[in-house]
Amino acid sequence: SFKFIDDDEKTVAFSVHKRDREDVIRNYYGFLRYVFRTNHLYPALISPQNQAHYQKALQNLFQGCLHRDLGTAKSCIQILEAFVNWGVRWAGGGGGLKKFLAQDVTAATIKSLGTNLDPNDAKGNLAVLSVCQIHIKLAAAYGQDYLNLLHQYMSKLMISGAAGSGLERYLKTVRQAATVTSSPAEMQAAAFEAKGALKTVLNEHAHRKKAAGAAVR
Image (cartoon, rainbow, N blue to C red):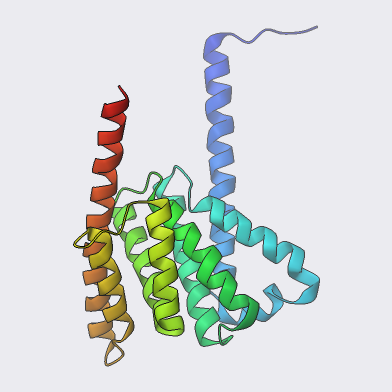
């Protein structure tokens, strides 16, 4: 016979299901992190017989960058950072890969910034730094063409790039950081400077959204 479940049992059942689902998601992204951050696995990952799995994994990574859980979003952005490092260093970053890295990965990072990524949270702060590292690495690989694309994407998805804006300062720090190759310490310092500029962009974006919401009310 059919058995009704009271509210308490429904709540417990839902909580257990939600926790189990979140555990599966974390384990899945943990597995992807291992695969994407292990250089010797890339040839197998991008082989013709694995193309369907490869494309699906990338799409899941893009979705993960927008996840409401900051830990998951951070992990996915860091996976993309490792993928970019591999793409421009080991694969040469040319052809179709160049288009994918410059356009698709960049769009994913900017969309993640425009969701619930809080730069004042510890995990959010690390995610923002990884976004900066991605932009710097791609700017170093593809030059001014990439910086123009980055400006276009950020202006479209976030805020205007008016003279003196936080976005203009961020693009300047990315351009400068992309030319620093002298030492890891100087490269890290340049990345942290870019992160500070990007946090200013995010604050401007948050203020504009708040003002727009107040105007509607």
